[in-house]
Image (tube, rainbow, N blue to C red; front, side, top):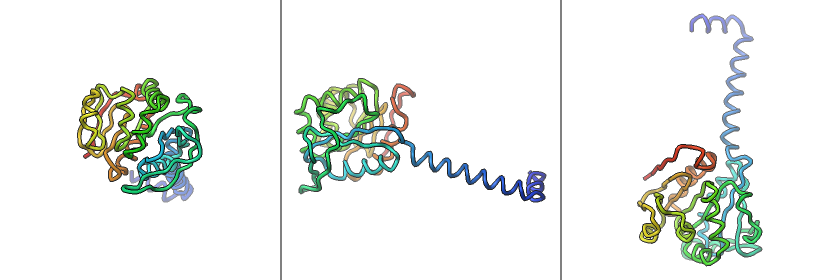
Length: 225
């Protein structure tokens, strides 16, 4: 080590080269982190009554990570969010459900809100769209009341999930293990309980979406309290 340092000091060119390589390496790792989802297309399935923050905040996190997010809804134009106890802002619909092809997406996000999934579960095409992601072994993230769509699609048997607490009996009846945790990850499926959990939800969602198909890695289940 002493010889290496002495050699670098005696030869300024070595110092410049070493610093340049270190800076280049740092920039490269930062760029990779920032663009971790570059080239990935993520579907966000929702309709009127979605909980505002549960769509906008995960979408922002995905966009910042380099993903191309697409809001899909059963109707054209826009859908209106729900902000706790009153109607919130409108979000532009990027693609009609009738024209959405699951094979064109790498992952799926299901925002919550009481009204939103209750309406979507009555749309056979919405249920089929959700189910196709599990059939294709693609990662899915659902928060709050979003897991209602997982119940309707009959994809929860043998899974470990969390959700808004009022859904726990329905989740268990669908064959899943339910726990009251901030975020649960089970083989590419990320679930959280409520808006307060969004930071943890976003972090795990991006991790799983970067990994891609759950079948391509060792099955795992993780929990954050």
